[in-house]
Length: 229
Image (cartoon, rainbow, N blue to C red; front, side, top):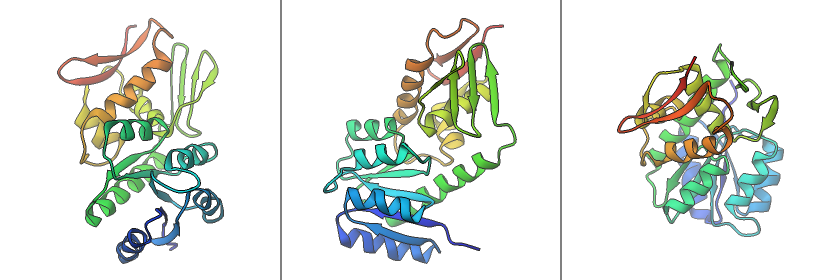
């Protein structure tokens, strides 16, 4: 059985080597890049299962690398940030990152995040129900396509998985913690604003499309995809 491959991108070589040691102990194969340009080229050459991507990089920063990878791949990306500021986390998630980890981090947490994201990615690939349709809306998780009035709308992978999960379970209310667990695939270490960011972005694409369904906030509880027929 082939080992899953992790691409670690950080200009701090000591962090790279630390992560290599711990990830290899967990039976992952590790490849390393120390700047943004080599990160993109290494990704194309190695086709990793997941990317650990630092934000502050020479040549191309982590935002630019994330954008480039998302142009042609849905491979999970976990952002690494030394700041931990809301702006950094929100921007990374909006660009299509699957998760973020704030430095300094515990290696056990990194390993847990990787396993969870890969598990979620794998379970999404084997889910039997891959497509749902509502008035003027089509969500296809097989090829990660969101269509409004028959026109494809550019949607990052995690937004796709969130709206698919809500629409597949129409009229069921989910708490933010439930969505973090069921869509992100683990009990989240951070705060629930992760869900709010994704819902906000989805609403920008879906509000006013149809009067037969709505991505609705249930105040004090969470969110639901409400059908009105």
